[in-house]
Amino acid sequence: MMTVDLQYASTETALPTHRDIHTWADTALLLSTETNGLHSTPEEPNFPAELTVRIVDEEEMRDLNRRYRGQEKTTNVLSFPCDASNFPGLHLLGDIVVCAPVVKREAGEQGKEPVAHWAHMVIHGTLHLMGFDHLSEPQAVQMESLETRILARLGFSDPYR
Image (cartoon, rainbow, N blue to C red; front, top):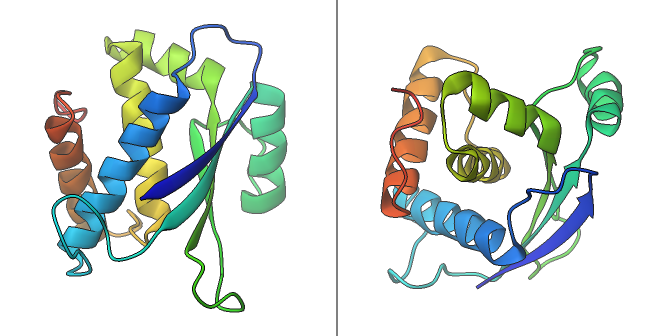
């Protein structure tokens, strides 16, 4: 079972609930561990996992993106994996930071339901914490395919169509 520490630090009002975010992250964890052969049963991963999701405004996201990626701009989601090797038995996945105004704007520009785009961003961030990336074409194909499967399991359409 996953524990999600949710931090609301945004002035946006139409934000997903803790339950929604937990469901999206938990489903991403379950299906990604299954993909990697780490999964024990369809209901529960082999380990209890913990992550933090922080929902922010553009100023904080721009600061984080500048500080950790050297990019002077805002972005939709950042993931910060945790190196928990010094904490045996703990499965601290890391932190996901989602920029509420960017997610809202992108959903409108892309003609997506906001809740579907929120789900995609939380799933995308969770997969990064699980070691997935999209730096190369094969990695991107694998990650996007997994994102699409997870979203379909949750009743959302393919975000890449």
